[in-house]
Image (cartoon, rainbow, N blue to C red; front, side, top):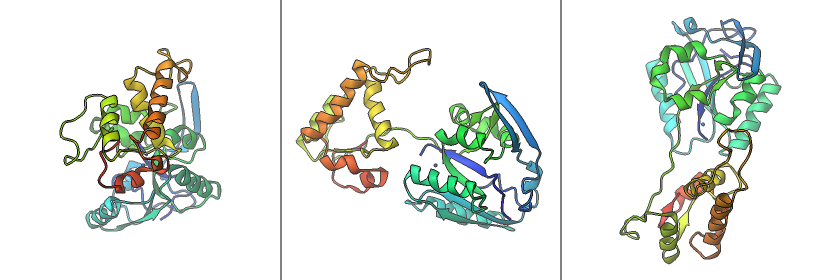
Length: 283
């Protein structure tokens, strides 16, 4: 079975086992088994999107292609294997896109514009919700979310909520952690200044410093710690160019200049930072 243009999406912060949303059994001409929806909310409107049909889960059979970024940990491969074992009649397989979120987005958009049926389920970044829903590339997953709403962290549901409807299913959410080598760091620093000062004396602090969302996230950790904000309290204007944010940015620049962070940190993504060993930290 292939879904024609409309796909079920699972949203994570940078990417779920494709369990409950395998609406298998439909044809390429009308694969949803659902009705169209016209939704509005927050001043937006999405008309003509297919609504997921929960009845299609009953006795579903067919093949499901799960599109995702590169599975660098093996977690998704194991999850697909477990899913197939628990769901006889459905065969799921992985289609891996590049590691970069930008490249994943480009790959998916190319397929949708070509009306490709390559992806039945895909992992998406939360910032793609409005764009993909507006293009009517996603199923309206509201009936599925309504059935399981109490199982999800409310803020993760908001990231897939657009036009009064839910356009995916939360898979994961991120939390910032600072790892340190206990052979190098005997007591945990209490401030970012102390972290960088300690790192400068040892092997340096490592974080995702390449020019992509990873750097944005790591900058915001320091900016928020310095009292900075992205938007004004009423959410109506940008305050990114504030003294607090500029101070945090200069702090990161100085950290590279004085050796607290290696110069190569500006090339690291998640995998580059994770694979480095013997460092004082990994933000």
